[in-house]
Image (tube, one colour):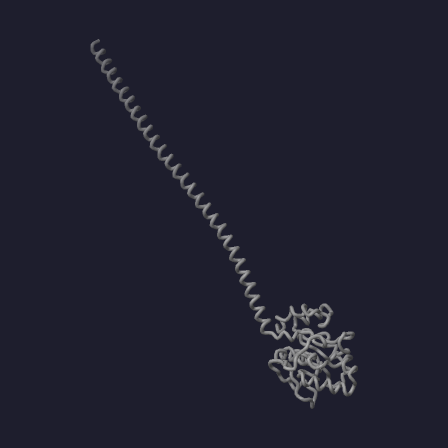
Length: 296
């Protein structure tokens, strides 16, 4: 009996010690878990705060980038506008320079409208190729500035089996004076005024005007309107910058289908397309073409 009591006592003590150990272990576990949870919560909270801070900083950075992009866009537009303005200014300067370097007399309306004084002559004159002169005729000249255009016209006409010859080119003030005097003596003043300009009013003094003929017609121009050469000029002369000065029904002189004046390709093309003639335009309209007179 005493042994049994002793055994029970030992078992009880053992159970108490084990229960206390388990309770103590559980307490330690709970304390460790709470500490762990607290630490982890702190770390998570710190991580969330850091993440939020990074997100905020990124948003600020994106805002700054967007602001910079908008500012860059504004500056780019300003630059483009400035570039356009500079480009326009350069074009204006180039245009003014071209105008200043071009003889404005070359597009003036003469023929009893404007006057060329006795001292006017082209700055440089060039001899017309003898191939395109009538046999036995004296050497003729034109302003050097139109020589390339006239040469191209004559060469292309020849390629099309059209034989053009030059009957008259540049005439000085003195030459026109003598010529008009001869016409007056031969035909009388009234008749002469219908087909010959007074000195200072002749387009030939500019050096940019020529009278065409054919080998067959020679100096007799009465049949020129019926020739293939005239038909070719009507269809093609504008391509080289030449226009007919005195068409049928003009207010200045008799019909002169042989008389062609260089006015530049732009103006000649526009006149051809609109089926108008040089003297149909106001001088202010003509002046708009002066800068591009010798553009190819």
